[in-house]
Image (tube, rainbow, N blue to C red; front, side):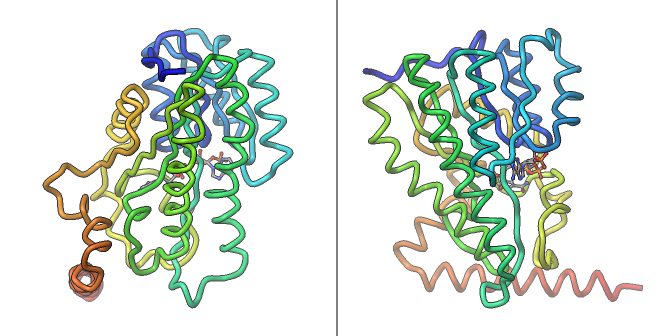
Length: 278
Ligand SMILES: NC(=O)c1ccc[n+]([C@@H]2O[C@H](COP(=O)([O-])OP(=O)(O)OC[C@H]3O[C@@H](n4cnc5c(N)ncnc54)[C@H](OP(=O)(O)O)[C@@H]3O)[C@@H](O)[C@H]2O)c1
């Protein structure tokens, strides 16, 4: 079966992590373009409030779902099946951050991050693919990160969780293409959302969130990827050095390590200067 073009109007799109940030911005943009949305997250009050802003709220479904809980994911996708009877696209966006040195990562953070960012994605794929088949094929977009292609200090666990999505997508592209399902990975960079406040650990290494992109801009890129069905898209243009950090690491790991070391040392010095400024 060949991969069909993706038309936003009339398509049923499931977005996990739709209660905030990039997921909510994607939902708002897709609703304006005529999609019917299954809005999934734990904070169902927020999903209800979001749906209430839509033109025809009854066409969309707020679905309470904790991706870290297998039973909750199964119940959620059953509810999607009952409401829509199919899925044209699944955006696996729900995710959490964790900022620790690898050798200081607490046990509960390993569980929380991997259960949400990796196992949660696999659970949604397992429950969502049968509904994509009912539509005769469609799209899957996994939301990774720029650090899903190159690990950076204090983000080892989070990086590892996002690296995993690229492995899953490589396998799924081959597994699912015969069924007309295109699989893509999206790599946003720093985005101004609640993510950074919600993340656990020492966020001192992070640049101020105000330096990031808006969730709306990142959502627009995600929707472009949904349409194209390309294997991967990044938020950095081809000439940006961070765009190639993963590739350079493959070819010359120490060269990239040195670049990143200098970058993080300079940033630490700048934030120290800002902290001691009278
Ligand atoms: N912000 C950035 O700088 C950035 C950069 C690169 C990649 N990303 C990735 O982009 C995605 C979205 O992040 P964001 O910036 O939009 O973060 P956000 O504003 O904190 O939103 C995260 C969303 O994930 C949901 N979520 C978290 N744990 C969940 C769980 N166990 N079950 C179901 N939903 C859960 C949250 O909903 P509830 O709490 O209501 O469940 C929320 O809707 C994440 O995968 C993140 O890793 C973010």
